[in-house]
Amino acid sequence: MSSNPKVAATPLVMRTTAWKDYALLDSGHGRKLERYGPYQVVRPEPQCLWAPRLAESVWAKADAVFDPTDEDEAGRWRFSKPTKETWPLGWRDVKFHGRFTAFRHLAFFPEQAANWTWLDERVRQRVAKGGEPPKILNLFGYTGVASLVCAAAGAAVTHVDASKKAIGWARDNAALSGLSEAPIRWICEDARKYVQREVRRGTKYDGIILDPPKYGRGPTGEVWRLFEDLPELLGLCCELLSENAEFLILNAYAERISGLSLAGLMADQMQGRGGTIDWGELALMEDSETRGVGLSFFARWAAQNP
Image 1 (spheres, rainbow, N blue to C red):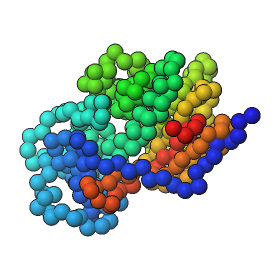
Image 2: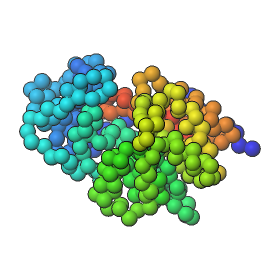
Image 3: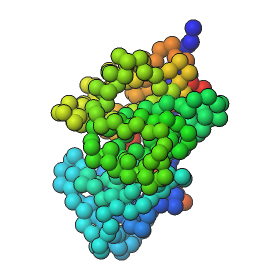
Image 4: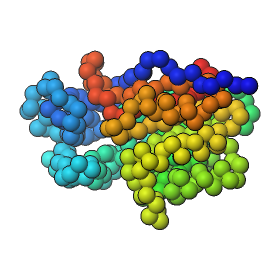
């Protein structure tokens, strides 16, 4: 009989540093100065309580500045020069479009690159063992970068999101990456309803990515609330894991949650599974500096060490 998963005794900070198409250039006074391909962007970040290192004249040269209008990340962009509606970006072999969205994001979350690295290693490790391509489920998949990372590594991916627009953007990113013919199923549906149906069908997955919002609505009005609904959804996801599953990764951006609480919930739902649960936060780091911004919390179960 398998033992219960072992929860790490100390947190892990998964740090994302600059790559070719992204960099955190500076931060401070409640803002971040970032580079997204050809554009320099200023976005609000209340956690940046310190003073910026670069002169205000450098910040003033940004191509786009996001002005928030409320506490739910809505607002407007101000542009200092004409910008493209979309432009190509990349991470390793995966390509995707940058976009100035109405919710301060640019259609992907750069701090997730630390998770992409981990997922890429896990999937490639599984593929190297031979046999059928591992089946990966990506819930709340948004514009699909994590799905494309797994597909490029050799997985068969099921990508689920409640937004038709996000699914369309994800398909565009797949085409840009040369992965239009990759084994990716694009499902526009409420994540909870989809998982409930998959449990009834007896479907199994070798890895699951779970990145729920704090609050959301499904395509037919379903309401999602993180604190009320996550325990049930995570439990259902655990039922979907195959006997030889590799991983389950859970990410959350809610301010009132922690990596340790996510790990505790995961350990409770995965009794008898064995393996290990790491937990901590994702952080963006400034170029060549030790200063960084923690942006989300995670817990991840792995069947064994890579």
